[in-house]
Image (cartoon, rainbow, N blue to C red):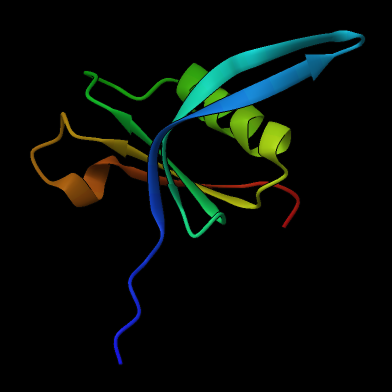
Length: 87
């Protein structure tokens, strides 16, 4: 029996800072199996801020692994960056 992956798109993630809770601190593009965040981009060049953004998302959700996908590449494999949190 084949098992389907649990994929959630455009998930609102709450952020709590000191005593302030924001119900929608950010929106994760894709979360797979409640384990991996996939952040989708289509930019000329991936910048350090894009990697930092995904790392922040990982820290806020306490997830360990993220993938940054830039679709503005001739070969998609050149636009994939793996980001790890506390591994």
